[in-house]
Length: 358
Ligand code: NAD
Image (cartoon, rainbow, N blue to C red; front, side, top):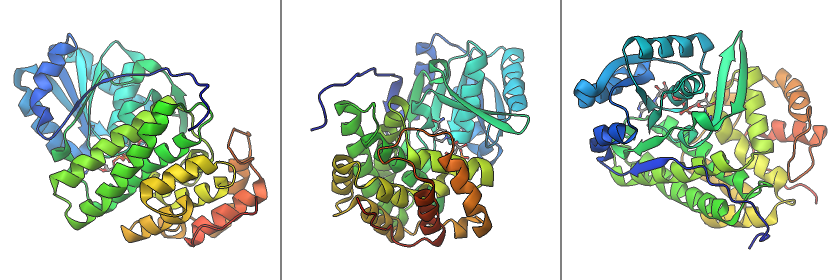
């Protein structure tokens, strides 16, 4: 077991989980002391938004189907103005991390309680972390006010998530749990959640690939994403998340796909410095080695393996290494610019993660 010296400060939301749990939507709105909800979703998921609005009937104040990636501040202001004009007293956000991000931006600026209905495995609904883009710059922060008050996990809504996105979104969730296992501020409870989250996701994803509309695998994946998201919301992240933030922010690479490609290589980098975490990750994957096991797992479920196939340019690797090695941050293995450059090369090529000397 890890050290028995820890701080446990649970940040909690009310979680309603299960196939058909959407049936409790009205009850949950009333439990928030609210009466009328503005429904928020992305344009692509407008049908789902309309379905939620219909379900709400007179409890629906209106639909705002315009959420986009990276949460532009102007959009957050427009959504908030719409909520006030329509006399809503809460927001129901349905969708992935982008839609939930818009809900969080509203919560940051207002008194509106947020009820989230996630349809991907990003885990954003369980974290107090927000990101808002203003004048082309994405500002991220942590504020407990943005944590949704209630989360309804209904696997039936995720059956439409395309297999490719399901796989990368699931790997994104696994990345939260994997880094949570070596976080400096981890505690025994978050580590239990992390290992179980990885195990559930590793069991679920091959099932989704085989049968995308099967509720059992979808349910297990959503359960895994809840656990992994809770870990992300409660402990600090390290090298892997920093690298993905750099690649997404400065080189416009897609979020979940980038997490998928980088994870095995970030684990290899930290292998010698975090042996207990690696043992737990490997155990959850039923593999001998966490990094190699993660690479093999990604291959088996047809996930992208290289930054090259995500559109990264080889000539940008030097700059990416510079950015990722600047502003030092904590990581189990000290940050070394040349080693980061080599890691990025491996991720670019999509090769098996290397063995580093201790
Ligand atoms: P996303 O929300 O951008 O969704 C990707 C696409 O999938 C969108 O077009 C969406 O409409 C569609 N989609 C979602 N669910 C669907 C479904 N069930 N069926 C069909 N289509 C569906 O992607 P994401 O990976 O969930 O979120 C990524 C964003 O979330 C990033 O901006 C990232 O920074 C943020 N994020 C934030 C946190 C946090 O804690 N703040 C955590 C993870 C991710």
